[in-house]
Image (cartoon, rainbow over the protein chains, first blue to last red):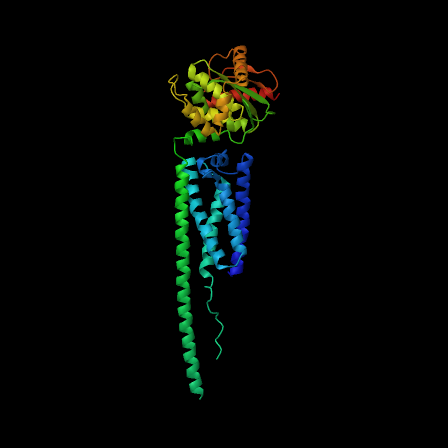
Length: 149
Length: 260
């Protein structure tokens, strides 16, 4: 996969993530019940109302939204810092998502398809962003063109 | 001549290959060290976030309790106005008569109410009106007034569920300021505003109406119920309120009658 294709895939997944996290952020602030297709009756509402849905008074949905917007920006911008920031954001995202999924299943005992979708996206993002960071050329590296005689 | 040129070209190719190999190796090392740094930073941030998140889920303190919050969350996302929970256009109206100290009210709330809530209220089939009585003792009066004041914030149902999740022993004096603060935190009730309004005329009026409804319908024990079509005659209904199957059967019958 070329770097360009990789950035496009990361960008598309970021947009999906923005949709999911944006919806959950809206649900939080509008105080409405999320549409819940899986995870039992009221599973999403239970997860959304849990202690773990807030971090230092900020809804985790809003933090997720911020993360996906950062990932989108990092995919659009072609620079060393954007590759590093993208990988950092995705790795933090996957770590925190893993914790939230654990809490959801074992502590809150309810699951929510929105949160699970976001966790899956973050796993994909972590893989793609790490790959993008590792395969990029180091700044100032020579090209593979033959040297002049 | 040609052999010298060939030798030169071979040496050059060798040099280039070695250089490329060295560069690739340096590049790999640099990339991996960057990734290592990024991963380490991510781990530190995630661990920090988990520690902060965990400290917010303590079972005590001003942040409230996990059981209380989970109980209050049950009614999340359902229309609520004062003492009424559910769609105002729901065909069936259920009146529930309670005393906050009554242990069976707590048991009903924990064991039967979640089914009623999910199957009838959340689905728009029924709305529930909370009629708060206070005949068991002083704690009942304190709880009734404060809960009704929480109702002025349209949070009485969250408060009620959080209260029952942590209900104490009857007349043990557990309904203290700290207890009410904790239940308020669980239920998302503005404690200061409710504390200010608990002695208000509005609260007294709502409690008097509940008492009047209980007298009219001969509801002298708790939890007890009255049901009927919304906007129509609400009549006393006797059912086995602590048995989910029996209670939902009663609701089904009342609902069928209300929808006629």
